[in-house]
Image (cartoon, rainbow, N blue to C red; front, side, top):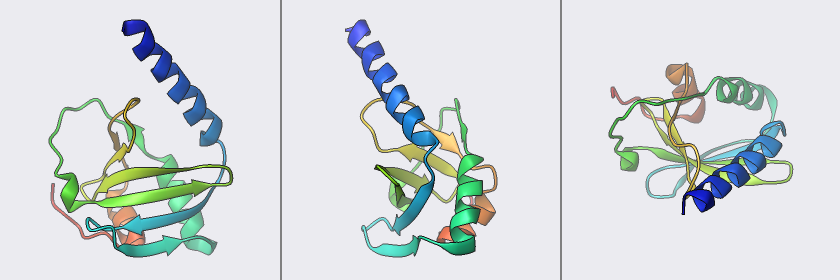
Amino acid sequence: MRKMKLFYILIFLLLFSAGAKAEIVKITVLDGNFKEVKVISSGDELKKFNTLWESKIESNVKIKVNWSEGYKLDISKEKNSMRWLYHPGGWLMPLLKKGPGLYQIKNKEEFNKLITAEIVNK
């Protein structure tokens, strides 16, 4: 069982790192009801998103996040896409069964403003 878990983590890391260098070409922001809030696909907004996105750091803290207060971010790269959950408190989590868990955006205020997320003091 432990070997299978390690195998899945290694596969995820290989796929994630292979796609990590690819540039993000489109972001679709969905609210808690899966309603499209915003699409970012060009210009200064896309550059700013990429810069803020690269600033995310993996977090080892144990917190309870009410993801229903958050958003879904569909991150599209040239060859693949991935959905992330985002809470306006600056917390991110990839929507995967296995793999790394929680991340934090360094500048949540700018990130929230860019994706038009409501600021939540949490």
